[in-house]
Image (cartoon, rainbow, N blue to C red):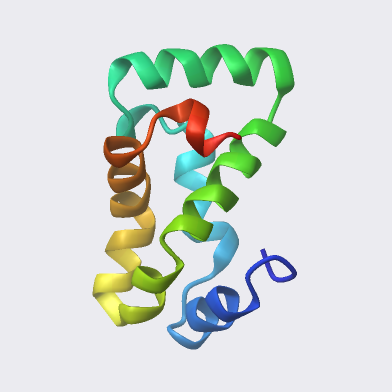
Length: 101
């Protein structure tokens, strides 16, 4: 993330968000709690086939499409958005296939 989205990375760190800690719950739950059931089931299938790289690719794509919003948030709003809002918003607005293209 530091290389792909340096502005977002700097923004998170300047708001005292540790990148690994911020996204660990999404990886541990495979985004299941933030996606509609059909998308969560498909993501689980992709995870079994491709491993954790599919999760990394998904997260980076979500950051890409929501970069402006992420950069506009501060402190607790930013933390809450990164923990749950980012994934929920992206999976409600985009099909999983589009996010993984």
